[in-house]
Image (cartoon, rainbow, N blue to C red; front, side, top):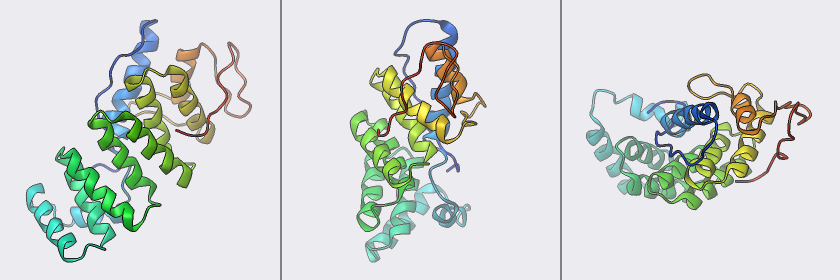
Length: 216
């Protein structure tokens, strides 16, 4: 599992300027191949898996499945099991394990974000957005949840305006936010809207951007 993880699967949902499409496609590749499957787990949550690098993933899954069977209240074991299922593309089992962890601690934005990624992998886009929204409500500065929100809105739900709002808010929080390829999200917004975004004032040199949104 990577530390800033992401998953790869963007769907071209928009027409128009090839440059715009290219930049947005690059963003999505970073997210779903990078942000979504990456950057959601903390070091402490990942440590047990790292400590057993010599074992294959199936062996590690067996170890943690036994651990949660013996101690269903072990939140970290459920998170690690969810991570292992995540990395082995067992989406339903990953969702179940993350769900058990969230029953114990419903306020973990990283687990909520990973759970959202798994819902997206199953085509459950609204459920993915709901998970990202909960993560953002708990941690308004959670950049991965905001990035992923925009990707799902744009590529899966065809909501360009909603995606721009999500990414604009991300840039407001971190003006240097970039995808895995190093493309600034502010540049993506500029290409999509024809306006250069000023994260301090929201002003642009071209058509006005949508006001930063709160939620999903």
